[in-house]
Length: 300
Image (cartoon, rainbow, N blue to C red; front, side, top):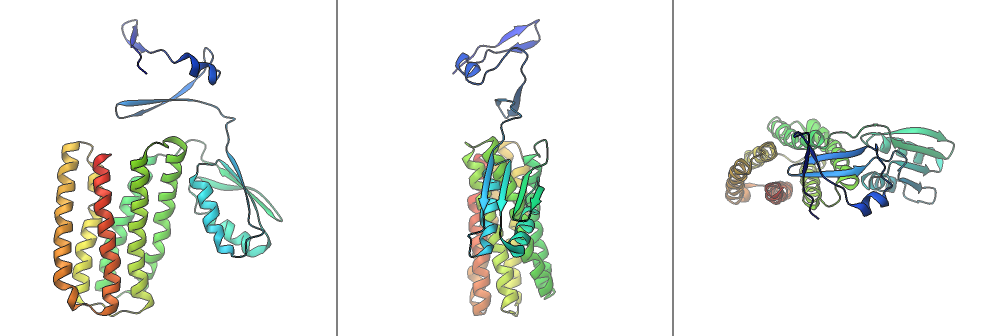
């Protein structure tokens, strides 16, 4: 629908709101509305402090307690404000407490012998952009630190970086939750976040395979990985350029670097051991996902 802008007093711009919408949400004179500015759009929302979304999760009949790590984050991402969790035994309780500690903005409000109640305790919404930037930074950091660990044959550091994968995912979960609550129609952002999670998992798979199999890393492997890590670290440059022309330029540069990586991979692959070949296949998958990501960042 379209609305004409009216200027009152020559300075204040006013537009009318649709009557059916006013009636549906019981808007009265003096009521406050929430306005969110997004590029050339303004989103108008009602402010309803009593609108709280709750969910109940019962883990008492779950045979595999590790499934709790699936259920609670899924509810969190869906945008619920409060979750009642029923559990059986100390093992499930510990897992629930560990899981809740990873949910950005959530905390335990009440707990009993077989029950834990958690809710969003941030009060105001956290800033989506700052958390998204953190995701890109952490991905770049994981790749750069991994290169140094490989050069130094520091398997303990690689193991640490593999576990850092979870911290990246927790921040991605927050961003997905934000979209579900505030911007459900933003399919591009949703797709980008899922691609970033996939890329993060592939990097973690690389480190895990190297550590678990105690692979002796060759110079060829390090050279290929280092080229990939530079590309991953440069990913944030696309996001930091607001102008379309600059984004196109940066995407083109990253695309060229991906081509260079693929040529290097073909040239050096035959020099790798079988286990190195498996590990580098994860890296190659991460770069393929990165290519899909930068194209979506360009659309956004």
